Image 1 (cartoon, rainbow, N blue to C red):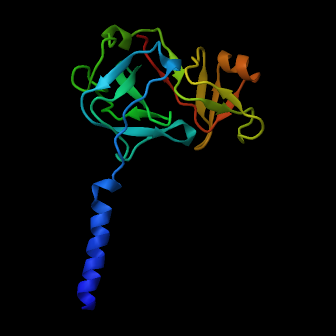
Image 2 (cartoon, rainbow, N blue to C red; image 1 turned 90 degrees about the vertical axis):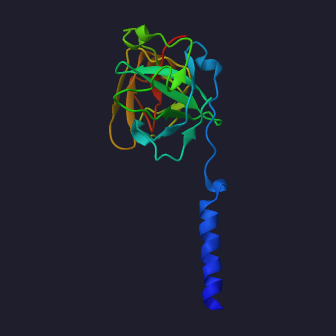
Image 3 (cartoon, rainbow, N blue to C red; image 1 turned 180 degrees about the vertical axis):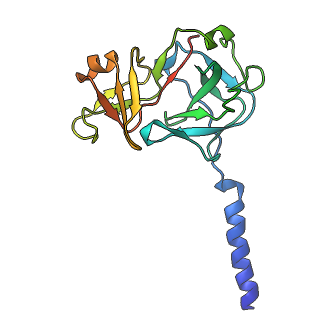
Length: 195
């Protein structure tokens, strides 16, 4: 009797752990008025997502996903297409793609503004994807200066000073915040292409 009861408890735990309700729902991309001048695209198949982490990294374990039909912002990196989804809460995520190929137009996504000439264009648009708190101290203490999503960072410098802090400089930050060098846990800015 004890053995069969123990089996039922283990089976119940295993079934609950494997049920579809324990899997996160796929992300369906949101759009933002702050990013309206940038090219959007639509995924034609499911993809894993990488989420922003401290120190400026994008990391994914396969649990966060975007489904076919998801709207995303199209970017360029190393002459390959890349994509960024805005999740329902406004946080950005990078679409995980093969580094050698990137996202492939016509296979991974469709878009009316994915002009191949934009992949090699010297006209870069480094844009913050989310509202970002910047500090005048690498300890991330003191009053924060908020830079809005959609802010373009021209003539910038960016580095990861350690695992948890990024250093960023740009005229837009100097103008808005009043300090030359800014620090953040993460500053999700990426190279987007115009419509």
